[in-house]
Length: 264
Length: 253
Image (cartoon, chains in turn yellow, green):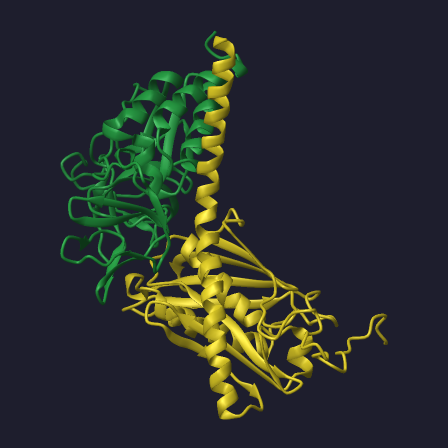
């Protein structure tokens, strides 16, 4: 059956002026919007809009581990469930989790667990559900970024936050934060996650062809943009509480004005 | 049922009302690099030569300790805590109670008043017939460590099964704000809404009022305190809120 809209990547990913398909410069990020505490039933939750990606993350627990044989008597475990909605990609995705979902769940577990004090939760599990509502390249990086926010919002002690972004190569030029088209038609894709408490890389995957010099240059530019995203994460966590404070201050000043009028 | 008095639970020794500049911090944020004058306190760790927060919370300096009071989190059972539990399972030798913690609590018949050895008729075995699944109890934690399920008792003042009233839940770190400094907030709530309140450490609050209007007003007030727990001047604002709501709803006029 043919689709009404064809899923084709454009022929040229970078035009003569050095602009990318969506009008960005080579080292520009897509617009990012983050919010915490939006799933009321979860212990902690967060939502991110990163370009065309829309992702929810929710944390439950610590709670009992099922199946029981996965429990560890000396420490807790982090279980990540990365799932894509059937409508999140161009052609309908089968609902059953496949090889890719299992892989991304695993790399997310490995990149997030260094910041957690899992020894505090023996015999129990922290369960993190990541639901991709819309996907447009770089979902694993966006998922790690939003998962760190959800864990922090749940009040789980963490050494630091975790931030991730992808570098890459398209049309022979090094780029940052690959979109869906650049992922598919580009030459290389390099997702990187960093744990801020020791400034170490906790996720590094690579797909494509790149010289060693290009690789090092990409890592350097990724590090710069990671810092920007980290600031956004911190701001999103604080905003939830600062907004309430500001509302109260506004109300109080309104009250004072009203009181002043009455006296006159 | 006799009118029960609520007991004021252990007040948090850090009083957030006294500190004016309550800075909100996030995990990994450096709180101080001055290790000569400051020590890492609660909710912080020392990383190299820095004191670093591990929670989203309020930064509070007390003497030479830097603490972070978390704004959300789970309840960690400690011996001596009074908590509200709901019976989720029973078998001939014990009840299992949901106490809003990582593990369920265990209540044995020998730790209930009726089945204590001195009160039990000679030759009779303790049984778990008294309580059913779904019953709500106020219990005390007598033993809790990281290897065993917390053990509970109903022998003690104010403890035992609740036959009436309502239960609401808020995040456990916000419980000290419901109580207030030296119980100021809870006394205010009790006086203005004429309700019985029992606040427990696991984030559950038992309330019982003369009529449903007062109970609803109290519930709304508690959720307002929970929402604004990180702001200053809360007691005065709550007093004003209750007075406003009373005139709006036409209670006590």
